[in-house]
Length: 198
Image 1 (cartoon, one colour):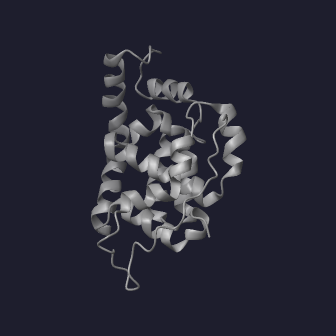
Image 2 (image 1 turned 120 degrees about the vertical axis):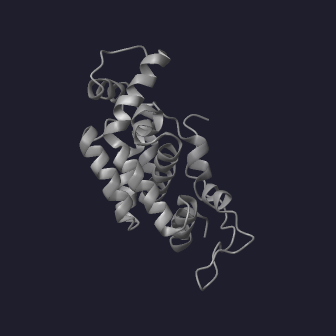
């Protein structure tokens, strides 16, 4: 079926946290987050503008926000903010910022907003456009996206622009004492009606 149905919701797997706020030992936060956004994650087609135009309106704001934060945070943790803009997941950049504000993750939202202001606002959904902006930021000529030497040079030069924000992101995680997955699991539990079947 095209486009795939991304609106199917899983049954709520039960609480991930006790009433006192502690994490239940039986809860795996990665599985919990994926249970909440699994159909979105498995059905989302990056770099397909028509797919996005048709399907994104079928999701609620909580689903989009959570999916976007999950992906953008994963990119930051894997390769820094530059990687968000370089990879396909960058199409979710503005959605992640809106989701962070919506969920009250204001320090995360501030980091994202500052990064986006340094890059381009709004962050382009089109990956090629983001590549061109990174090349310009790095003072380089357009290149073939498969040229790994050029990609490496872009990352080296652009990462310097975002290093302080990468550090702030990891400081935020260290201060909270929680991984982004646990934070997202807490949001899911507080808003479970947005993510699971009733």
